[in-house]
Image (cartoon, rainbow, N blue to C red; front, side):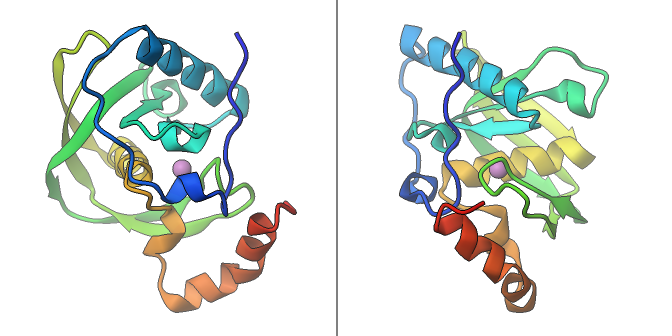
Length: 169
Ligand code: NI
């Protein structure tokens, strides 16, 4: 199965608000498995559909990267229903290669969504998973991790961001 190409900073699709998925059909199942393949090939932790140019509310997470959990997490139409606390850790993104910065995220997050069988799921996330879910849900709203940085930190990254926009990584 061929992997999808990951869109990088400066690509307008990364700024789009993805649309709700109304039916999980073959197209969505196919997209999910291609996204997982792409995520594995890229060695990332999470991947949202907008990052592969699909304006649909779905993301995938490779939990084996940080939990004793082998099965990948696939979430459709995620909604944050609760968040508690704060954590600040360094973050990166497959759409911003070579770019890292400390980002403050909720310490705990409750997310409601749907799986590939259209069954409702509720995820009680803590720590790294909470951070990853917040990051991926942001993607579906056209938000990138660098948007959370203050002006000083952003200025430090401005050269890197300009290079990414220009396609020179
Ligand atoms: Ni990302």
